[in-house]
Length: 508
Image (cartoon, rainbow, N blue to C red):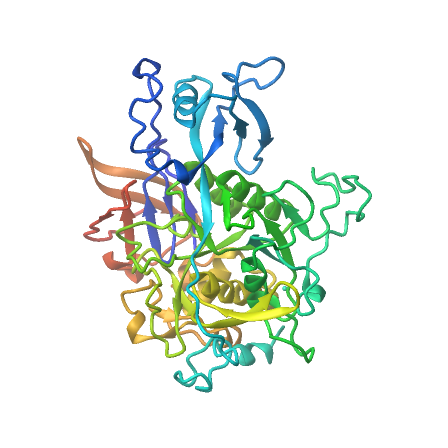
């Protein structure tokens, strides 16, 4: 797939699936004369949705952040390197988030100021434990439909790749996970020294951004369950088996024991994953609404070739109409995952979206690892998402020279088409890793797009505030006749879909 940025500063467009044009969110800078609480009701509706003592501020490139810089009584707690100029600021006692945002948004040195939104695990309804893992190989052993699975054994016959689990941490001592944990080869355990110079001392298995220490041990259980679905050790005679037996699990904790974390923690974890070489992350969490800063972080991760797999959400809503974040960020490195049950039906709790949710995977009654060498079954799009992450890591293992676009194209083109998913997810199908590794594709993308880049783009036909078309120039020849208007998605900043009437080739 290709990615492009408009030459116009107010527009950003991304290539997703076939063609996916996006208009950049408008940034609103408050006028200082409006007062500290003006026009903030739409931004901060519920105080429980954001951290009360910190905010996120992105300074402009020419801002000088040294010496006795005036931060309006706040102080910098950390730099979030994945986004240029982004810092987490701790507010002084008595300063409200609303007041601080008004002050910083009116500061001419500031590009963006946002609340540090609280992010949560995707809720997991309690389900009785199933005796076996139907999601990997379904023989109707749980009363479901035979072969309503991802064909994992067929994949293991071909190949058995690091996945960053951005979650509540991981029980890295678990009997079914220890052998597959990522270890930082540049760090010496327990010496208190940042041996590899990455800014974190003793980060052997990853890092804990919830408690700001080097021990990302799971004190909640969710992250360990996710990790087991991705990469529990296979063929060891104990417990369960992950989708990819020989992957490496990087433990990045930003969600605390109560299942909550912050936007700053999520960006820090993603920054660590990219910096330390993980080209894939599993993100079974959501909340906080749209954040332009988290959006920038995911976009910058994309530039590094990183795939961001995200849970579609468990509210049962249509994400095309009511966006769920982070799965609704419309970059082509974001893979949004819905959940199915053991009969290949969309789970009752699963969010869906014909254009905003990409693929489905088993997510009801999923058996996996839990802390303390235990096991249990959980349900949710949180459980579907790691099936896809494990599958992506297998595809990349088999095809190490693939770009992230090629990996995702193979993932989407190899799904099992399911009638009940038509119009619910963009691929119309449920994950089938066996097809992906065996080369069985049901809807391969146009070959002309492989490796193509968008060199320039511009809005055309502008009349007042209306844009009636986009002109796009590719890096190589593209068969325009391959596409129809139905293949193109254009959205407004609010997420509303715009109608595309047709496609026209332009000479030269």
